[in-house]
Length: 362
Image 1 (cartoon, rainbow, N blue to C red):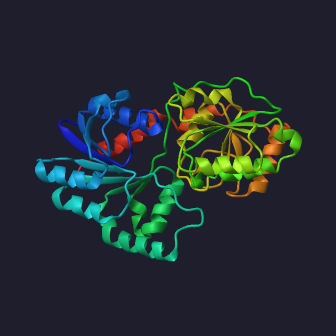
Image 2 (cartoon, helix red, strand yellow):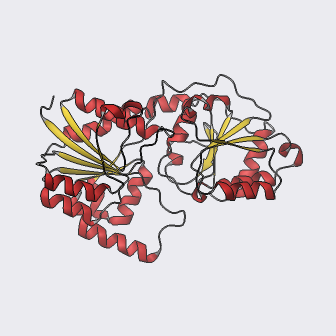
Image 3 (cartoon, rainbow, N blue to C red):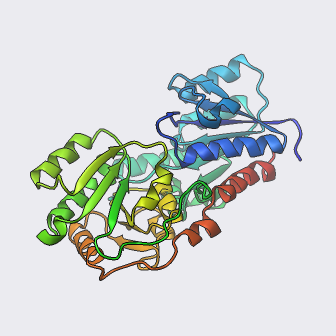
């Protein structure tokens, strides 16, 4: 056991009582495990909240400016952090240089950020290479939430980072997820669980459904869980194709993981992804996933075994999969929960992140 150790976690993740997801559970369990190992954690979030287990955390409300608040806090207080961990912060920025000017802490940067489907512009690529040369030296460990993410970190900032990167997969709380016992082979029920923004590709799904034979369009039911800035665009598209009977907007649900088991398949037509917690939660509910070949999706979804993979933005391939699934010509018969139990549990995720602190003490 490590005694009297203190770490800081900087996280650009807004705390919202109406949206409790996999990362919230990760923060709660990580804090608990740190305390059990004699490690005190100062959390720096954009805002303050006491919902769930956040009341047990030592949270500093950064007023939506995490880095600047942290710099000021460290200047005004005698900080003796052994580690500083970042989540959802941009990598290789001057902020990491600034931290090293007043702290000898080991810096661990966790990358959750998806990349554009067609890659960055040439200008952006050059900027990232330069940032990698200038500022990567101030980050001791780079963590990607999938092997895809690790590969992208190296591609973005330089091959010299290979020895400093680690893959730690996201995980979910399996115990709270209700398991579906039986699937409908004909006319299965579908859900989408996603923030409603353009990069999630739900507009592709709407077009794909519009191309289905009329007898399938009359029967198919897709519930959309989530909210976001693209909702009105999606409503307009649904109205344009006269698909109001096919899609239902369900809004954001704090108990979504208990609702997965009401469905036969989850649809995730995303254009960009790192490693989706929604996919893991769906699989844990024994609900196969139909999704795209982006990010780390293919590191958990095996086509034909626990879901179906298609090329992002290929509405005709998606339409073909939907048609065959609705007619029972394509089906998943295995229990999809097993892969999550074995490889993607929250307990394993927390243990791997905690090991970085225990193994990399300065």
